[in-house]
Length: 153
Image (cartoon, rainbow, N blue to C red; front, side, top):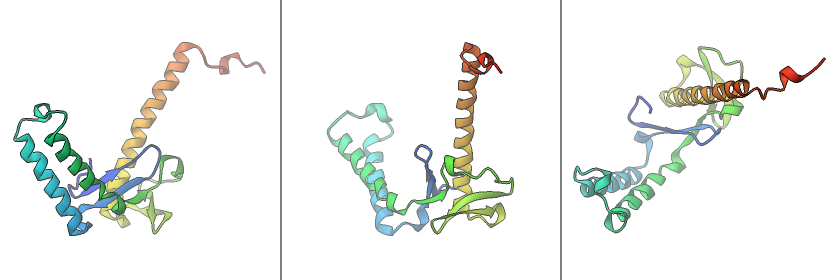
């Protein structure tokens, strides 16, 4: 979750981190989301998700919120490259970002707030993926299925 409450970041699979600063959205998009969120809040009335029936007005209000939130998608921009596209020469003080459709290495002090938030999400995603790969490799070693020990010179 970004530390700036106005920035939304998302990533699908190995793709780029997509980001948007909510303060830059057209007013009609923002008002549509707020209106739908108020409808959901009114319906919940502090009762939590368990208090909603599976159909009827609750479903309609939640669908309205989902449709309103989807209006953000055209404003989301690729901000850091996907996992497989990341350059291995990234330094502690410079990161790959996407500017004007091209991947560039930018010193952290020259990055925008949006680029920094997206880079945080990308690094966090990489950390989680690395932990999964480590566990998978340990599992292969523990099972004795590694072919490396069976290869003869």
